[in-house]
Length: 304
Ligand SMILES: [Zn+2]
Image 1 (tube, protein in one colour):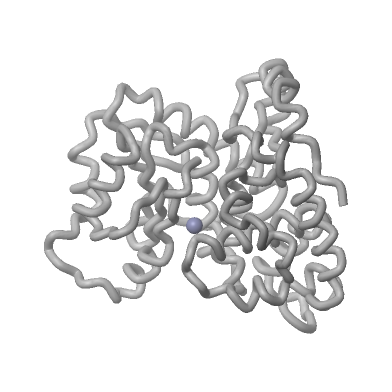
Image 2 (image 1 turned 90 degrees about the vertical axis):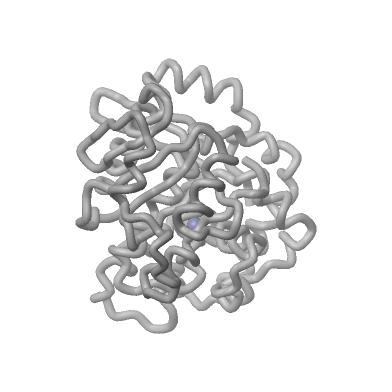
């Protein structure tokens, strides 16, 4: 992944609120699809691509199984399917397309626009990018309480995902660090506090997204991510303090000692964590085991 990856969520929100000019230059979803030669549909997606459909099938295979995993482990799915999913040939074409059609002004690797219920990426955008963008739909539509830090903190957590399809269904492993985000945090990693990350929750710079991802990986390793989802989705369980504190079972300030141990553990392991591979979904357990063995050192959990 490059440092260029920016998610277009802010722009998407502006669109959904109608704050962007509705110029006639902005295409309708139907007009997007006309430029793509290949269409491929799965239960939850209509894929449009410029290639022979290979990329659509790869993304479709992964995303349909990712939805099964989400539904089994974290949350019921929202409504509003199928999602239109557009795959450009490369990152440059993606950004030219988004700029021309949607007025996107930043370079992105993937994007979800709620207004169009549409996702965009390129053939080499990667599975982690598609999981991140799809989580914007899930979080945006299912979280009844959406804390600012979580808007990016939760989707970005899913950027690193590995798995395979077993006889009983998809198996996924999560909670890994993302090398370029670690590089972005640099020396500031060990000075982070939960309160600071939460109070920076509305800042748009990419650096802050990486802070928020560190908090969601911490929640995961503490075994609290599922609880966070359950509280955010249902919002009927009474809790004191913030949603994050309710999931942690303690105040942000008292959880900071553990968080500090976690970031120190990550910091100590940075050298091997910079080799964490791109997300991958294998066709079999055997293929996954081979992949895992090659990357065993980088994928070893952080000790703290
Ligand atoms: Zn995002």
